[in-house]
Image (cartoon, helix red, strand yellow):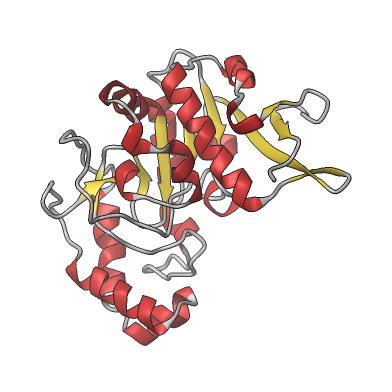
Length: 258
């Protein structure tokens, strides 16, 4: 079983990583192409392209100019330990064991606008490039066109070594669009997380993002290999709701967060 999540805008490259283990990115050539395009963008162009403030444009301009291969433990950090944000609060990678990280390396994948697909221990340098950004690269008008079927093929390759051919979609719609479901050689399951609010269960973005991370953590720490066992997920008050679930869209609910 493979499960995918979105990256995060918030990054931590200040604290020391908890492990010296690392791997190299899957698509160095594609990274180089995108990186070259980004290096040519001015601060103003970055601000307009990404709809970000002047200070953020300046930060990412400097990142773009300084980012280059090869990556090593002195100039880069493992992806799962570098990303912060709601999903990664749920995963809480800094408190995973070495064995947990090894298991995650074989099962968890992070979708990325710049790197395509990251394994947890892949070294990366800081960046900001959301998958929905309309960045033109050669004849490709956006990142979805640029990545084409590369991400999908890499996921299929990862699925070959799994006991059960299941892809669990824990990514946002923006990032999931970089995957071509019809070409995935596995069953696809999409969990949803809903809280009781008012008079019905609703998806509340902040809670849903953290719940995706919590489910990742649950799968990692319980070494879940069969999709059906995901239904036992019970962290932070969530539980599987058979009545609201339809087909491969599995809904997990809780009575609301006060």
